Length: 252
Image (cartoon, rainbow, N blue to C red):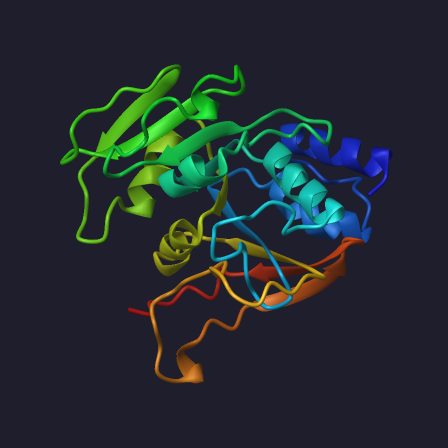
């Protein structure tokens, strides 16, 4: 990724036109995100060679290599909002910023169906991009410092991804990155809401621990998702760029 290509991608995000855009691998990876006018949903997973995203004790620091981390920050810079679940907020205390690349921080969205967040988590106090929290109408109303709370009627499996995306779209947030955790990503994939999935794999073997995507069980491989996939070297990590838009099927 050169500075000129990255600046062109940031410009493309604003204009939506790629009439004079180059055809480099970097443009292929990020161009679809940058030029999307919405709705567009990207899910991103950074994992080890054996498919783990953390140790059994929950240590997820440095799962991605430096280039995998830069890739994640570029994805954040090209979307309007980034979504994480409440467990990711409480366990990892993420800033969800683009501090290692040039660009604007996305709106930060936490899905806290049962209102378990306490309000002392870092993203409510770090002075970063605005925060939106989604809660169930069945949970006790919980307000959070410096955050907007949106309450939704829950389904049997929690808050519906389609309703979350609709609420964000009403706020002008149409390009979305679903960053974690595994259950949150799985719910958006299983609901058919993900256009593109990025799986960045680092040269690391953890051996045990949670995996990056946990979809409902299937009996035969004929039921599996088989997305069109392109593979790119990021440097320290390998990226699998998967198109899920035409691979939306219920696995329930």
